[in-house]
Image (cartoon, rainbow, N blue to C red; front, side, top):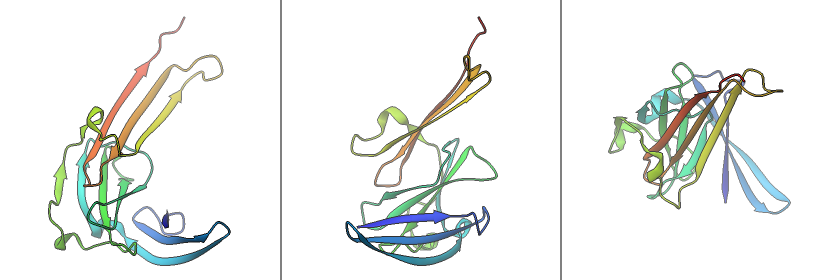
Length: 157
C-alpha cells in the first residue's frame, strides 16, 4: 500500500517534490524519493472555478493516481495531474480527455468518492465570526472534479 507525500516548501510553488511511503508492516515502511517536478508541465486537466485549498491524491480507475493541485497564483483554478503506479507524473500529451473543464455539482459526487470540506472564518472569532467561507470538493476515480463553495456574512447583533 503506497501513500504519497508531496511538498513544495524546499522547491517553491512551481515545483513539487514527490516521495512514496511504502508500508511494509505496522512498524516498518520505506521512504522512496521520486523526484522534483515542474508540475505545470504535467497538467492533465484544469478546472476553472474549481476551488480547493490543499493538494491531494486520489486513485485513478485505470491504475495509478490523480494529484489535484490548487493553483498558487489563482486559487479559483484546480489542476489535475496523472501519476503512474510508481507515482511518477505522466506526460499529458499521451493522455486522453485533457483540457479545461468546469466542476460538476458537489451534490453529484459519487458515494464511493472521498468528500473534502474546508471552512475559513474571519472577524471576531472569540465572540462570533463576521464571515465564513466554506468549500466542499471531491474527485471521482475518473478524474472528474466536483465542488461547491459559499461565503456567508453574519450580521452584528
